[in-house]
Amino acid sequence: MTRPFRFAVNMVTPAVGGEWRKRCRRAEELGYDVIQVADHLGMPAPFPSVVAAAYATERPRVGPFVLNAAFWTPALLAREIATVDALTDGRLEVGLGTGYVREEHERAGVAWRTPGGRVDHLARTIRELERLLGDESHAGQLVQRPRPPLLIGAKGDRMLRLTAEHADIAAFTGARTSPVDGTLTVMNAGDLAERITTYRRFAAGRETPAELNLLIQWVAVTRDRRASVREALHRLPYLTENEMLDLPMLLIGTVRQMADQLRAQRERYGFSYLTVLDSYMEEFGAVIEELRGE
Image (cartoon, rainbow, N blue to C red; front, side):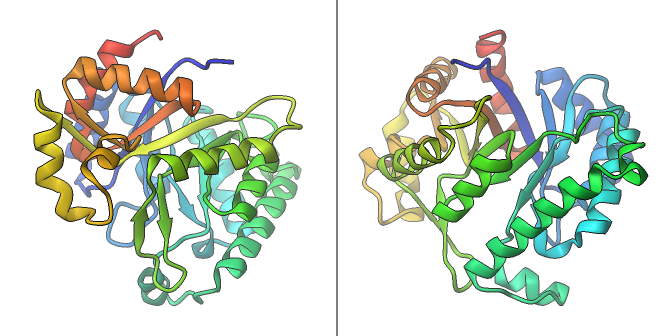
């Protein structure tokens, strides 16, 4: 089944109230379907930011992308989700992940668990959220029943199993994280394809397939794709020029070339829900116009 495209912008740059509302309205004008907010220290706090985004706009859905489960207890998170779903008239999508940056855990005074420990904590959080959101103290506030859509960001086998079991949206970044400190290493296209194949195997028994999301890390409008890649090779010295050109999370070329790339990736991988960082919001808006309605 080929899903229609959806487009999201991940707002990671802080802004005062008037500027925040202006940026959110601009995202809506450009055709974005979802306004997302990351959960990293030094960036906007996700829940108040998405409420403000919803109040500034009429159409886009809103949500954290993605919450660091280590920063939240299930009871407090259930309260936030229920309240924000009510305040946004049912426009909330909830993104959840394990958290991967060791330094942020230390700054927040939160224990840095092993990779397996972080997955365990996320699994417990999801189970408790499903129970708590079904309780009338929270369910009475929810606009979306039995809960808002759940997006889970995953890479390893245990996380992919958890995603296959619980998530409405399976999110991929196209990167691996170091278990020591959370440093990111970009996967090549073949490695990403293997991860998606593994996820599909785990999700084979689902009645309704999950939507697949991809975080686009770089958008560059150019008529010379290879020249742009050569200028950036130093950022990813472990990849060749051709491997970089084949990376799904890099969009490089003319608007038409980018749109064709996304169509091909939807066919190859299944990515229909695409997120870009706010620094690329304007450039990607032209790609949205090219793909609108597909």
